[in-house]
Length: 102
Image (cartoon, rainbow, N blue to C red):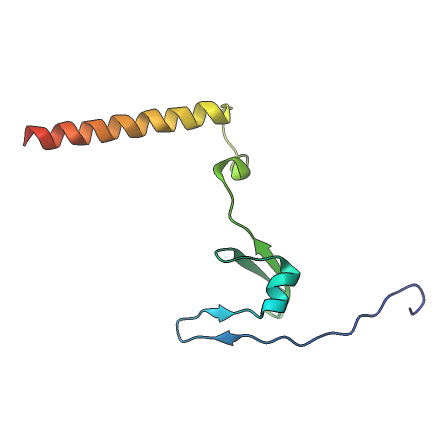
């Protein structure tokens, strides 16, 4: 400890970038960041365009992202889901009817 400040040694972890732009992240880093297959990562850059932070962005359900976009009216999440289901069912039924008429 140095004046109340802990100094941690940095460990160099490396990954491999494929020709398709995919990055293999070492298991130690995946464990440390608690990231799983399918998770997205946000790379935070400083003013010199150097990566200063990596933020895991896990998969989210529709309920998890509600409120991310500002709405001009309020609607209950369950009502919105039911409305979407009803509208999709109407669209599917309309498509079936059109194919039967042909």
